[in-house]
Amino acid sequence: MKPNSAAARDIAYHLHPATNARRHEQIGPMVIERGHGIYVVDDQGQEYIEGLAGLWSVAVGFGEERLARVADAQLRKLPYYHSFAHKSHPAVIDLSERLVGISPERLTKVFFTNSGSEANDTAIKLIWYANNARGRPEKKKIISRHRAYHGITIAAASLTGLAPNHRLFDLPLPGFLHVSCPHHYRGAEPGESQEDFATRLAEELDETIVREGPDTVAAFIGEPLMGAGGVIVPPRTYWEKIQAVLRKHDVWLIADEVINGFGRTGRMFACETYGIDPDVMVLSKQITSSYAPLAAVLISDEIYEAVADGSAEVGTFGHGFTGSGHPVATAVGLENLNIIEERDLVGHAAAMSAPFLDALHGFADRPLVGETRGAGLIGAVELVADKATKAAFAQPGATGLAVAEACHREGLIIRAIGDVIAFCPPLIIEAGEIADMFARFDRALAQVEATQAAA
Image (cartoon, rainbow, N blue to C red; front, side):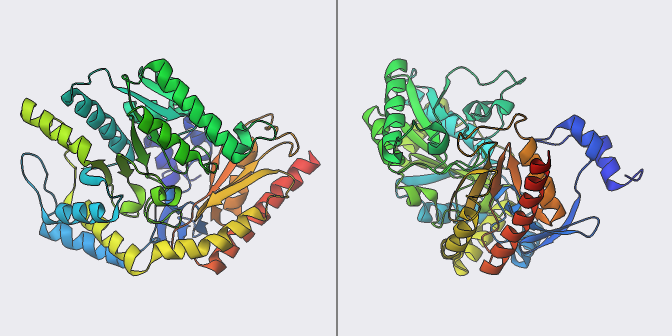
């Protein structure tokens, strides 16, 4: 690369998240300069279909002028204000009311953060605070799942069930427990149905709570459909059975809708898709189509009342961020929801699910493909060394990386999660664009198949 180029300067000065820093020194970045619709363009003029909507998040596509205009207007009118000590502003009030109005019925209050990680940290602190205020100081443990992704701040990363987010960080912290991932393809016993697998996982959760002591377990957190752990669709009856266990032991349920929310599964929230009645719901990403950093924690009245009582005892609720409910972010979020509703992007995602999933499942018979899975407009292709035995590759992640790089050559950006290829395009994608996206993937996969066959 050229000295003093953008790529060279990036290597010199920028430490990247979720990146192998030594490999980055060797290969440098793909520098994206602009975007329009479902496409982005790099600094070499190469156009790509953004098959992961950025990071599962650009619902309305790139270059949406309405969001740019709203952000500009808000910056000119009130570029910043806070929500501390009884202060507020119109945008945060309007968005709070809107979110409560469209969310599951028992959720009555909204707390804003800047990211999903901060939101999940906040959810943990709210639950700890509420249980202290209710005289239950021992009820603090949080149960998550292996392969879950709930963020990367210290507490949120403790919820996350992925080894790279723990190794060398001294995580997870004590009091954070993990139960089995609900992946039928990888976790089921031979001949075990989805329903029986779900029963076994619910029994595991029940046994974990009993072993730890129900008076010590505060909450269970789960993505309705798991995203960054490999797009894991829950087995049939899973959430029904999990919720029954939680109700039995008076354990609160946190639904992490950071990836799922605002139409991704073909409903406004995946809680609707899977029949989940949460005590806490965490939102981010598509709340603003990631045009501005914003996340939200919605809580039930039961939790709010306990928190309110605690704040009266202490004199304040001692938690918050400088950017909580930022005027620009909340104004953009409100307009983003207007676009989603006016253009019925939730209904559009449901309508586009059939061509999306049909094309995705069309790869099931390919020699390197072990499983295809998905819901709505999110899906994955899991690559394996042996279809019959489901055996992984000798070098985990190398084949997935090879497919991702071949996709780049074909003008497609996807996400390789080890040897799982994830797709999560903007909600605005049309049937013809879906066909084009998977045609590019087909050509990329064929290149890797040919290389593997020749080896």
